[in-house]
Image (tube, rainbow, N blue to C red):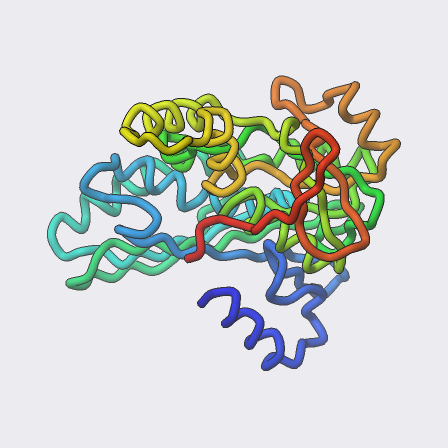
Length: 316
Ligand SMILES: [Mg+2]
């Protein structure tokens, strides 16, 4: 539903003289008086969809609600500035819950120098919903967008993928510092953060850049948690039919689980080679997992054979 709605909205809206970049990227960019550019993004997290309140420390939920916004600012290579926090709280225990959500998000706000500028708080008979809007500023290089990938660019990612449900989906580190460093010191053509699935978010970046991408399956950095889940899944199968190997299953998790909140980047080939050899984000690893191509769509490559890859991920 969400992607259809955004497509409709982009047709329906007529732009605005201040809006340099509207719906369709990780954040919007607004031109302010004086010529500075403001980057703005918002996320709505709901109990039962984005977290389970009865099984999760509310401090981790509060932290996540801010961190997902910081991840979107990172995808734009914007420096975080401020955030406003809106809560719809279930009636019972509302005050304590609100306090705990903030106890979780405030340390992250301090670490990223984000001013908590206000918000709104309601109680109701529904589940907890927390919406944070974050504001950032562009650096001298301007925003990093989804539109700049070109055929021949290498496909780079930070960190590893899959199995985020084991904890990373709550406790991930927004790649703000990584994005700012890369955008300032290197030539990065395009970027997106992986919120919904490596293959799905890559497909979104490709769509905005009007190109396609080939993923070298053997190069995808698969998280340990993805292997653990894959092992448990294969142990639980009592079937005579041939089953995918644990490694295949773990790769499937890496390509489609989502909530990794890593960066997916396009960089010109020579620049990418330098980044891979220098590893400027260490200990965060940069990995080259494929290339952008002129033909639209996604492909998977292994041992010389190239097959179409269906984008998979979390559809809200
Ligand atoms: Mg995003």
